[in-house]
Length: 595
Image (cartoon, rainbow, N blue to C red):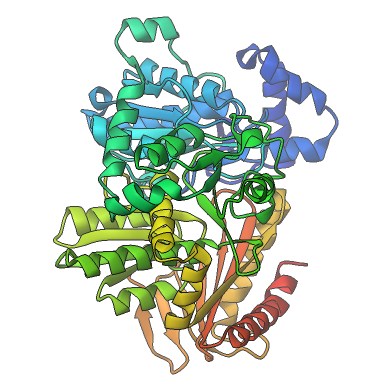
């Protein structure tokens, strides 16, 4: 079995002997340099660690590439970044002869080695004759999406691991429309990476030579100004921010990431003078020293912001993740304490605010639509129905929302108003094609000012929605299973669930099941139909009681997630239904995972 770049040419994982062969090359070859060889030296004799680092190439999937930072083919390092960039360059040249002149825009966040990886990617592109636009310092991921469209680039790259722990970094690729690559394009890039050559053999141009040749361009404030101008045009009721917004107190934490400058700037320039940043989390820091993980989905990440808000009498807290594409909220409840909102709650509140405001003003477009992912709350459907707006459901991943914007808003006569996913990603407007925490912060502040003008808090607004629409509750259970063994256990679990068909989960009966891998929907009465969506390794079930669940492995790490959703007129009934559903499902799935 031959190997290309350290991996068998048939795409399979390597055997123990093959792992050792590649490990020894990284340990001994001068091509990898003293710094890269130091880590392999430190794990001599540790066969399990050697296997984990070298049994496969770090996978380039639909979300790009993400992994632990370190030496090895299954890690994020200079050589894996160079190789994936060479694959991207080959893909671009093969797809469009005009790509080199259009170039690639590159951005990065505050993570360890993000700036170094970004420069390496730029210089590999330059070596391939492709122009690279490199931001002069860290920027939010949505600005990268905006810049690709603004500059007419052929592609974009952002070096980030989003909200993963500090030990991780990653590499995301965007197409010329500013959206993450489609499934088909990702697969083609992956094939090009596999044919890119051996680790250690891929060259990067000298920076001075690249600049002299006009291949490397540093991007600065001019893109920031254009991005801010675009965001301001997306305000729903500008008079609200210019009036009640001035008295609104907001605590903001960028969680040591890229959001500090753009989020504070857009809030300041749209009339929110009462923004206070959490000083201990203001500066970019790859160690994220004040949080266990820089994830606005986790209540613990709000601890320092809550302390500051209590001290200063602030009722609204906004948090963004390291690359500033996800946003979390904490608001005071009726008892005066803070509660964190879920991504579903924040998304539904924004959808209700945007749609109701457009309808009240009489400027709803002729064919409006909003988008949600398949694991996002069904409350979004109820909101869309009430306001006479179309709702489009897509696979998990914001790239699919971006695709629908292009298909329906850009290439048809529909008008996109809002899109969101349960994992704290939201988007308004069409100039960015990925989730955008900067525009979301602006809209959240405007929504809060809107409620304040009516003598209400955000929390009271949420309770009003529940009274109007019913109580929709969701839950998530996540399992991380490390290494090759973990990936295999997840695979066996998915195979076993598919073999069960529409079998019940404990006492929970199944009315229908969608297998997105095969693109089929099976009903309990025997009917079969298509999903109408691209292929994805996910299973979705509708229950006899009107609830739903979805089982979905991660595409970038050995993790599997289970999503649950129920609704009821009263909260207590919804809570009881959700608890029963989770218990019944986990009683089946956990044994299949070997837990």
